[in-house]
Image (tube, rainbow, N blue to C red; front, side, top):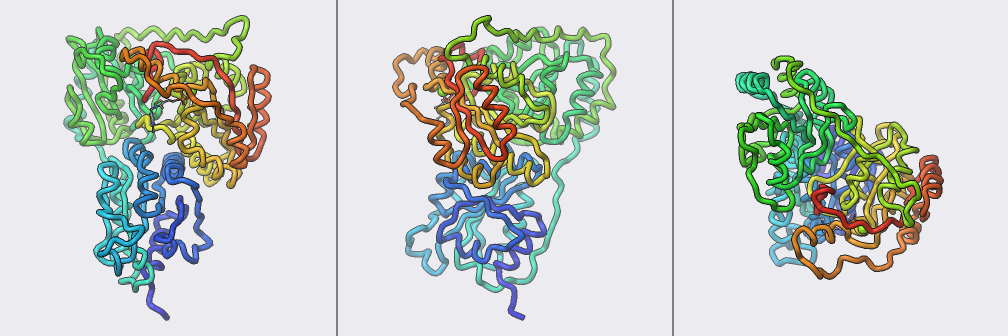
Length: 542
Ligand SMILES: Cc1ncc(C[n+]2csc(CCOP(=O)(O)OP(=O)(O)O)c2C)c(N)n1
Ligand SMILES: [Mg+2]
């Protein structure tokens, strides 16, 4: 029997690790890896690497497992870089491999050489490596897997020379497992619990790590036991608390001064599973109001260290919440917050064109209970959460970075995950007309795999949020904030999607229900009224 090659040992390892879905865009430096592609593996072709990386990210998040990516040397890495940065902030475990020129020639910089190959993806990968010898490729993949998964999870990068795959392997690769959560220090958790129990005016601030760790129910139980208000952490990319709950108080403001003002009157803020804090525009002020202390629980030592104030405790969000739930005193003496007064009203005569709020109101009437929302519609995201509140975990995704071009392809990966999981959950991607253009090639992948993803594209023909930012920052006459005429329906059809323009409530509802019954993807372009509103009211990201 011929000795096993690096190729054979690697595919066996990938099989053992259940990494059998490969997201990629191929080139000559990757073909020796992709040759004789095994029948039990699936290759998901993305037509541009920004889409490749974000599809894998969405897939990994929705399956709760790491995902494998294969990029074309330096050029493919470069195209994917914006979304690699986003995956790093999302803390998504991605094992990104990239082909490299042959070791025989690399000294003279032939075409396709990935020069200083570990430098390009930094600092947005947890580890970047090119194996010292071909025989180390499977072991390096194993190490990359361990590195990607362990908290805080994130993308890792391996550069693999194309002549490595046919080399003899050292033998089967060692298959290892690693833990994905760690418990908080018990003594410090008790101290935190005592401080929380003693607080008279307590604010809970919940972040994305809660949802990711499966801590949703524990978070609700803790808030109810404490009878304390819950805020979303600013710009949290995954909601971790039901937005219709009586204790829910909305998202904290995204700037220093207003955030402190919102916490005015509280004696303790407990931030769980988020940085302290993710700000966007600079509006100076104190970090916390006078008399307010802060406790911070996170699984990320970097986030614990970079907090401007407060005492931190490292640990998994779910384990911390469950631990606190057992330790804290019940808080019936605390005054419960007034439930949010959410103004869900519509004008008696619809606007022409409709406002974003009117569009989302029309959609919400047909909202399937199991739908998953993916959002990249910067200027009207607050209208969306008003009409389409998140009430269950794993039902809302967006990016942690604000780097446009992530959500449209991530929706494809999330829809693919539904197929793999045997779940028939429709994915609804609400993507602004500007945002839709960055990774628009993902529509071809959605069409190719006949995925149930429905894009709603609110078309205001502008970068509205940047106009709002210009008002806040007093920067008049910025060029490039109006979009040229874009025929989104034709673009979508060109990539193989069903597509339609819908202008009225009736047209929107007809198109949406047809899309919900269709097998493949649909793009619904909806002209909307231009609305330039105060940026801090919209609480979005640029
Ligand atoms: C990769 C990238 N390029 C540019 C930006 C800056 N940017 C932030 S929001 C935005 C406009 C988004 O426009 P659109 O999707 O139409 O949403 P609207 O503001 O109109 O609601 C731009 C260009 C960005 N965040 N990311
Ligand atoms: Mg727009």
